[in-house]
Image (cartoon, rainbow, N blue to C red; front, side, top):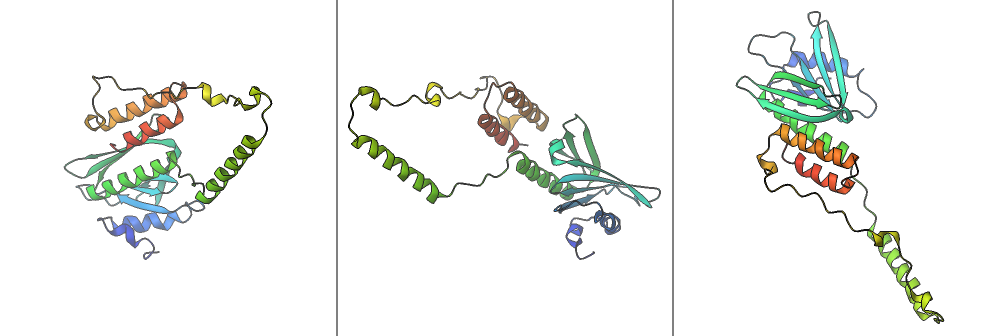
Length: 233
């Protein structure tokens, strides 16, 4: 087991804390769940039983020892429940926080700065994968075959004898009657995304979500806004 979790001891994690956590993780992990990173508190005073945070490809798990380390409380939040993540670097370590869909904010302080940056980056990657799943591309060969078949059908129509002008009039398709919805442009007085704080970026993303839910913008436009905002968070 020590070899299996050796990679989590590279950023000053407490070996004893890691050993206690990993000894219980095997019974907690779900099918196809993999651990991405483990961060451990490092308070200025000697702490025998620090809190820890485990990030997997399915959720965030908060581990808090109790009863002098004889037992532990585990609280987990799936990535679908998490709306945002934040890191605040202080003089003595960093504070990692995340918000949930139920408006809860969970924080763990005194995380070493290197560990805090690692879990923040990993969390952003997981949120991006959940909210923007990769869609398999259609093979180019199949697309080319469809185009060739359509061209053959058009050529056959052109060779037929036309007895009425109505026969050559193209049928009106539904999408021809619609004009693309232009994305909402920001007011001239709005600040650039690069000038906003993480909280302001999160509020802006929530506003775009409300526009999408109310049918004022399309899904593609919302995805574009979201991807741009996440790049600044």
